[in-house]
Length: 395
Image (cartoon, rainbow, N blue to C red; front, side, top):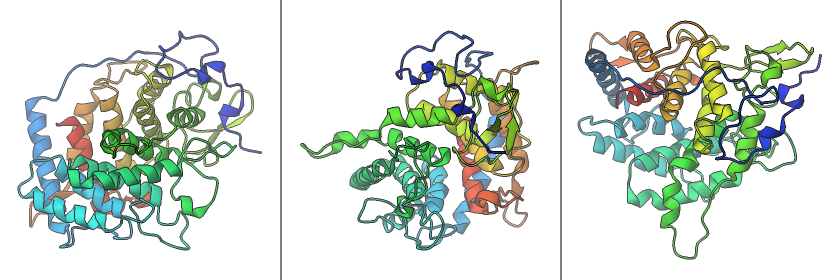
């Protein structure tokens, strides 16, 4: 049986609406279904905040002990791993962080390529050197330092990312992939999310270009169209509607047959939050039907015991992107189809504290996924993901 993504059924004309317009009223032809509206209120109690702060201190201590003299962490072929590890220090008041940040920044700068990307070429590897992935993450983290001497590096990285956007006449149009050097028509929602994040949070450096230089940006309208194509519509069934899939050809969470007998890709947790966050970076209104339906999917599938639809695979990336997306959406509670709304910040904080592994000899702590898929057997990466998730809920 041939796999067909649900977007190829009947896509309503509302999908082509211009960004920043009010969300349409719910109708039988709406692209996604609504069961709730956004709400925002509440914060962590003092005791839980203190527990979270202690947990973050243990995690930062653990990462600090593993930083190499050259400023790096983990696999030095992929600078994004060092960028992700230094990010929690940048956002903290950790003692002596300036030296750690300076060494990490120097390490990251050593990866800047003539084309503006921040990566190391890896010939004959599927995905190459992951040039888009590494550049997007590195430029985001370099921007977070606020250092003026990095403006030109970030500007060139923006030019690189913008040049990676795919404009072929195919289903991948508007998105981003891992590495343009592979010369293949390929994009996915993970790289599109990272690219959208990088281009949105660094946009202020465009005002610092020399007079007469053209400003650089991605085609946001095409990006949104790509993201929309990866959001399951009502015809996919109640269980899938509103959630997102990885890309047009890869059913990472498996497939399901809808009532019309069409095999569709199943939505899953981490990529749904990535899609939600990418829409927010694209400045889609928080009350837009696409955003509200993604939040409804999150409520219907709420769990912190797994990455919904993927089990333990990618669990800590799920925690990371969930915290960023719900924070950006201004969503302090997740409405459930039945029962009380979920105080996601409190529940996530308790979960992450409970999952921390503490070294008895040092008192430092780290996080690790027993399932090594998506590099989550790397303690450094998983600890970095988790610290940023906690920092999103305990500013």
